[in-house]
Image (tube, rainbow, N blue to C red; front, side, top):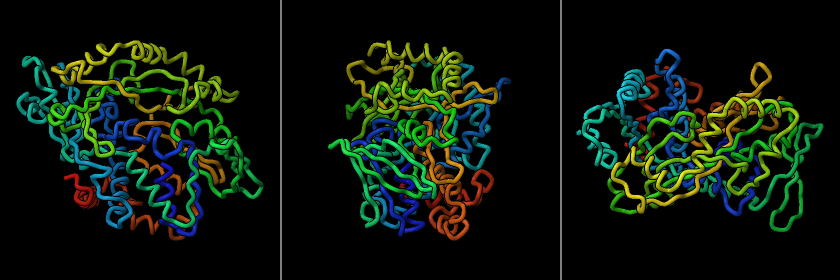
Length: 477
């Protein structure tokens, strides 16, 4: 998020002086790193949690449409940057990987069929395919179909122009490009400790050098908190009124990983299924082709767990320190009313390696325990906020929080996360720099992102022309 915002700001006003503060000794090694997220390029093609059923059993597709249109904005930004030499050859950060949904059982097949009928009728999803024929599915996903009971009722959808995104490599490329600018400074192994909002609207930011323990201050006209799970404590430290009432529910994750070339070669897709009852959306099971730092692998998971850390390299005190007078009731309310989620997370933590592989067998019946190892995924902090009754609700999404005067903004939440970074950062620009947007910035953004100011959900002609170009430049056809 921060790298995307910095990139856009330098395009809009090259004279801006920008400082990026990173608490680790390298960038993009928390939630953004390839091993710490699904890399799906969340587009709504395969993620079944984006198309829930209502109380009458009708599949709702609004969220999938919005996420798909938002991901197209990211693709446009990356296309522009590749064309202008600001990003490397696309295969270094994005690769063509079909997106598929796979289900079994009568009720789930009926759900997927209805989902396909609704989505494929919309221009954003017109390339989606559907099949209940085991032979067709064997061509699409041989590992998933090998060893499966031929009498089992199965179905799948496929979008061939899906992608696997190495967000870590992408972000490091963006930051490397920023570092070529004379007025950009990257402070590694530095941690933001405190904020003071000055009378002139600027911010005095206190920063600790983690190597020496010494402090220094920066004065900034605008501050963006794009620290993943670490954004909430920073937002609270800013003490802006808009931060009051927000809390966080941290969720950890793990992957099963296979790097055996003979197995990896047999699967080229991201295959998503249905989440277990009580599971958070980030725990939708999927068997993924991944290319991370140029290395191919298969990942299955994620297996969720509970943690009190907000970052992998965070503190076990993060959750406790985040509790305040303003968010105590919302956080307690969420804890009381989400016992199913708590029980689910505990059950996930208690699983053995064999238990985890047994879940994988739903997607790879012939898998062997010995071919898979366990790896830690990234931390996610789901948003807790006050509801209309002053209690709390758990939000599964991303949310921008900005000060009234537009001098400070933070991005909270998880899925769809990095995939919609371009859209989220456009929202930051619109909310925090309205005058500049009206005085030239919007026109420049239109050159970078051709759909800016348009609605791809309703403009089929524009979507078709943009998608043709992005898929071609990024080599996703």
